[in-house]
Amino acid sequence: MVMLDYRLNEEEQMIRDLARKISEEKIKPVREELDEKEEFPWDLMKAFAEADLCGLYIPEEYGGMGQKVLNFCLATEEISRVCGGVGVTFAASALGTAPILIFGTDEQKKKYLPDIASGKKLAAFGLTEANAGSDAGGIETTAVKDGDHYIVNGTKQWITNGGEAETYTLVAMTDKKKGSRGASAFIVEKGTPGFTFGKKEKKMGIRCSATRELVFQDCKIHKSQMLGREGMGFIVAMKTLDMTRPGIGAQAVGIAQGALDEALKYARERVQFGKPIVSFQAIQHMLADMATPLEAARALVYSTARLIDSGSKDYTLPASMAKLFASDTAMKVTTDAVQILAGYGYMREYPVEKMMRDAKITQIYEGTNQIQRNQIALNLIKLAAKKK
Ligand SMILES: Cc1cc2nc3c(=O)[nH]c(=O)nc-3n(C[C@H](O)[C@H](O)[C@H](O)COP(=O)(O)OP(=O)(O)OC[C@H]3O[C@@H](n4cnc5c(N)ncnc54)[C@H](O)[C@@H]3O)c2cc1C
Image 1 (tube, rainbow, N blue to C red):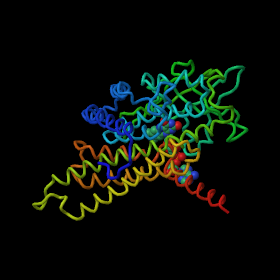
Image 2 (image 1 turned 90 degrees about the vertical axis):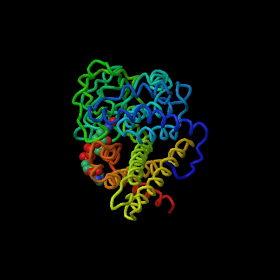
Image 3 (image 1 turned 30 degrees about the vertical axis):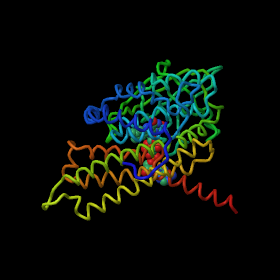
Image 4 (image 1 turned 45 degrees about the vertical axis):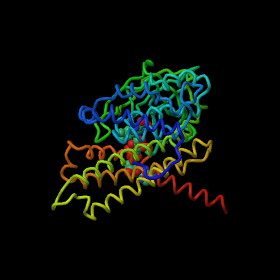
């Protein structure tokens, strides 16, 4: 249920409706089992591929449907409304692809994007390490130049789609002495000698998604696999996250909408003290306090996506705001949904406890919400200084 008219055009409506149909028909019947078994949703990824949903953010010349962040957000929202784990699996491929979209040469784009757009291959993005989460500058993976190659050593941790994806984008230190200008970004293919997969994580939520270590031991990567120039690794990472954070916002909006739908349905059916609980003002006010920020979050996510699609280069601030507000909203809305379903909400038989578990990660990955607040404040201060 969307409250506002976002003036979606025909194509946008078609994408939203298609993603909704697949989510209702194919994801809903299996989401509980996928979560329970922590099973990667390959069949669903194939269904998205058949429906042409994998190339929503990839330009037509490289086999996609046009580089549209809003279209991608609409699909991500609908998928996440039914299952946050499937939603992140879908979205993380875009995260892995964004560095190629933004910094790839025509040759790199021709080589990698068509298979991702068709859904034949998934992508993943490797930045985080055991000692470098929020402080990405602390990464220890190295890429040492050796003639026309770089020799990569190190371990990336908690990489979504790790092991399942074929195409990986990676940030490694090429010159530690240069600090923030000492990192570079690369594309690495699954199967490259010296590149293997380590520990597969067991998680609180989004349990059907794969979260795994990427292990590099003397892995030889040709210099043609570099994204941008040497020393641009952190710029690649930051520009990538600016572009993909509205996607986390869309995941959060979807999860929250799923929880609100369940809470409203249950409140109308559950009878206590001889009346449906929806007639109690306490429940009505909870529903109002869930729906209002949810709609505001959706408006922020869509507006930010439209800003990016308009060709603006300056969207760090709204991208962080969209991620921050939507994910905090999803955490609150899903927690309140469990409260409305109360004891039943706490049981795995009902979907809201899973939604609450799935919502939590949206406050953590692609920069914690503390880091988003830092980023927002920093940008506000910069803007104020410019105006003087
Ligand atoms: C399920 C899952 C999937 C993930 N997928 C990927 C992926 O695909 N690719 C990838 O590269 N990474 C991925 N990550 C990593 C994720 O982006 C990091 O977990 C996140 O950036 C935070 O890092 P950290 O967990 O090490 O927390 P830390 O950085 O150790 O932070 C710990 C706490 O300190 C706070 N904090 C840290 N620094 C500051 C500061 N300067 N100001 C205020 N507060 C601060 C944080 O907000 C947090 O509350 C994933 C993580 C998870 C859990």
